[in-house]
Length: 222
Image (cartoon, rainbow, N blue to C red; front, side):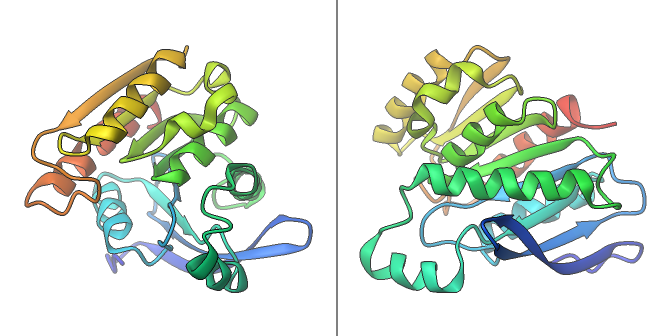
């Protein structure tokens, strides 16, 4: 993670639901323009190099970030072998809502606009949470996400939403187009040329980070 002077970085135990706390890494500049909560997908965590790369770019443009594990260690272990939790959008979205509520009462973030950066099934959880917290959430970005899994919540999303999909991820492109048609908020669907689902090709993740930074700057920055 970024170690730029002037940044306050700490790991918190964040209460999210039913006596469950999850670890999150909060990084704050001196005068943050907003805070972006990362909701990762299956098989990932707050230590994901891809999410940390995007977070670093957001830091460079003045945004605070909260990278949080959406599952407990025991749940992650179970999910690794059973896949039990990765598509449980209801559970994941409750965790995102819980982290959002924590941001709204934490003294260092209470006055900041909140954005979501979701990947894979985490994008669906972020969109459901955005529909449930329309006042708190100012913008959403999905990277290679499954917004279609947010289903009935999509028309209720008010936050401007950017869907980013790789051009080689053809099945997910179609799923994003279906979800896009259900969104009633300000919205944009961008196909990243040459990118597959994980955006591992040279320059593709950089493009994601650039577009996300621009989106949050447009809709979230104070």
